[in-house]
Length: 181
Image 1 (tube, one colour):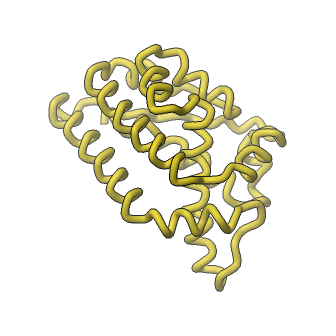
Image 2 (cartoon, rainbow, N blue to C red; image 1 turned 90 degrees about the vertical axis):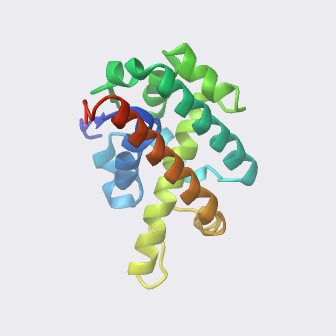
């Protein structure tokens, strides 16, 4: 395993999942797996995770809850700026160490680990979809075709959620005078 660390760079509402997207770049393709620093068990969990409509409903609720938390407690993102994680458990622990954040996730019906997995697999599937288009329809190894199809089927909902996160992040930047950006 490589000693590469997964570094988080939270900013307002974008703290919810932005750094996980960077992680997914490493996880999307098999040859890059060793660079991610993730264990075999974590890789297997990501490769076997199934995106579902009920999961998306819970995830959307959790994101909305977390947007409210970041509005009420902007200090949490500042406190976690630069936090490092090498595993799914490490990332989930970052969320769990803040009661408000943990409650935002669990009140939506998800564990922090499920929230992390959903975020990673969602981003991983998006990266795989782009690779699929560039590779003449061929998906990278370890990516479930059903998750890519799920992404395509729920694209409008996911774009709306992304826009809501960006608006919340912009609003946070406006109220802070753009500091910390």
